[in-house]
Length: 381
Image (cartoon, rainbow, N blue to C red; front, top):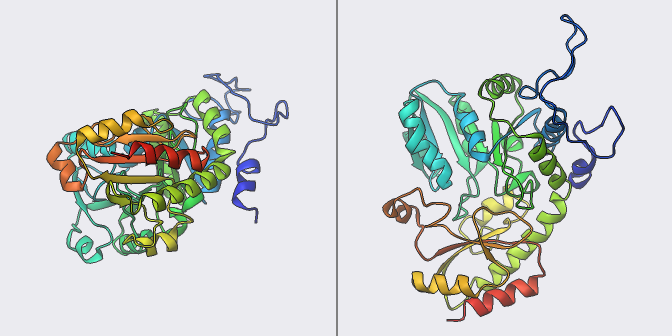
């Protein structure tokens, strides 16, 4: 069985049948000529299937140990695609502290349009989960690690409970990727992710994906994908596929850099709290060791100070750029209260543990000494 880095280069249906190109070409055609009314070609219309997107999707499925993947126009489009599997007036259990965009979909959209109800709880408390199960509970939404506080879920345990109660499970694997953990292997029914982050890896595309290892779910998603049409463009599929080729190299460097930064900041005089599951003193370190390869490439901190100190830190940073999103080769700093979780009220954010002094560091591939020096001088106040 080939190792992960080899799979990234060689697996999936990446063969260019027409020209034997070493890398799949960008096929922009919207429609494909058919031989006759009774003879259907492999491709007919790009909303249904496109050669560039298919090459990318099949590789995604292979690295996640799935049998089917569909590439969507964004991560939130992937989330909505999964939610469209549910009947009206369903009950959903979600990990507390989900991504702000997911929370916005749950609270501002599907409650109104589909009548769904969502409970946010600690999914590691299985007794609490059991107490929240209803006759109409149809989905458990797992985000692990969460954004931005990097809480983990014991994916195997919660998926086993879900299976015992015939409940669908979906894992947002954006922060980890298949390089770091494989939810389908751990028992999940569906993986969704934002490929804008580590999959693409270069901050130059918007995209998402949904992957499953079950044929019945795959059939339903494929129909929904074609019906809704929120698909990735050939250009974005090409960029994401190109980015995937170096996922192993990038994640190895980024996660090693993140661990070094977490260790450096762990006892820093101006850091109030640090969130990184790869640190031995993190309360979820054992879960990290069990289901993840590393603690990931994101480190989140609360500083000892106020919002003015936060602004001064950001002004002084040289290599950590203030930007939305994460997962690019460049190091980024995100102010969660005004960026990733701005859709929430201050009360909702505080309840989650996100404050004006919370900073999420997406660690890039730069030289670790430069990154450590940058943080040291910026945090000197």
